[in-house]
Each structure stands twice: as C-alpha cells, then as structure tokens.
Image (cartoon, rainbow, N blue to C red; front, side, top):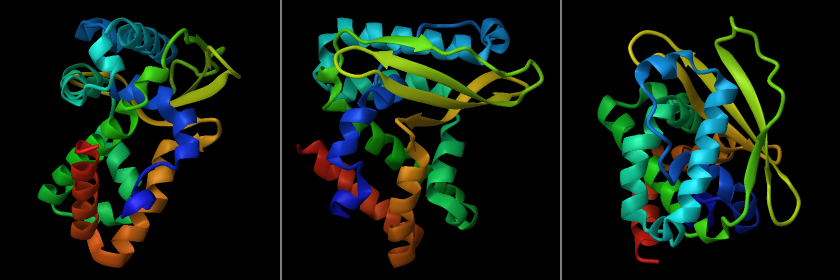
Length: 219
C-alpha cells in the first residue's frame, strides 16, 4: 500500500498536533455526571490542554513510546471519541456490508495506524498552547463544530473538531472528525481506503492496514 495508506509527509507536519491530541496522551479523569453536563467547547479545551501538558511532561510519550501511547489511548482517549463512527466514515459505503468481525478488525487496525503515524512526530510538541474560538452552537444542537487555534513556533494552526451529543449511559459529547488547516482527517483516509477496497475488498483493506502497521512497528 506504501504511501497511499498514510498521510503525505508534507501534511504530517500540519496534522501532528491533531493526531497527538486525539490519539497520543491522557485526558484528565472526568466523572460521568460532569461529562454529561460539559459543553463541547469546554470538553475540547480541557482535552487539548491536558494532552499538550502530558506530552510536554512525559518523556516516553514525547519520544514516541507506542506501547505507552496505546495504553493511554485505550484508557483515556477513546471514551471521548466515537471511533466506530470515525472508522465507518473513513471506510465509506463498504462499512455497511462488512461483518462485525471485519468492522472490529478495521477499527483496531485504523487506531493502530493513527497512533503509529503520529507517535514519531510528538517530539515536535514544545511550547504550543490552544485557544478555543467563540462557540456558536446552541443548547439544543446534537452535532457541533468547535474551532480552535494552536499557537507556538511558526504560524498558528487551525484545528477544528466535529462532535456529536450521545444520549443514555455515557452521555456527553464525543469527537468523530477533525480538521487541520482545511483538511478533514476522515476524508483524507476515505479516499485512500476506497482505492484499496475497490482493488481487493474489505479483507484487502484490512490486510493492507495490518501490513502497514507491521512495517511501521519495525521502523
């Protein structure tokens, strides 16, 4: 699959902070009651600040320790992300015809791909800070856009989050897509995944992702 299955090196520099904020460090613990009441802009601000602080202070995360990053992703980041929706959107229409086992494999391999893609670039995180732009959503909204700006060395980076409101147990806001400098992460992978699916189907995509991840683990 080669470079078709990863973000181009030119884009990686722009997207590293986004990947880091979603997939590479621990957000502070929040009780279920507070999570249900937390506004989407407050959630994004809290996670962004906590994650940046964690990356800056933890040398093993900053150096790209994939095992430690993956452990933190599973325990702290995934509760704030609708990763099934994110994966389904990246896979596109073929997701609906995939078996539950195939869907689980796709989620696992996609998560690993994202973590490994961004882990090696965490040493770029230094003095960045996050500013949440004025939020224009209303209390009745169930799907919102939260705009932020990451400031540090160089030009500010636009980083926007799409979130949905989840009902019932575990209620609260969950991220399902993010935009870096005008490029939506899910859309980027949807184009790449579609090429593989058209060539060799869902199993072909799973195999290609697994091969990419195995190759990255040796790098």
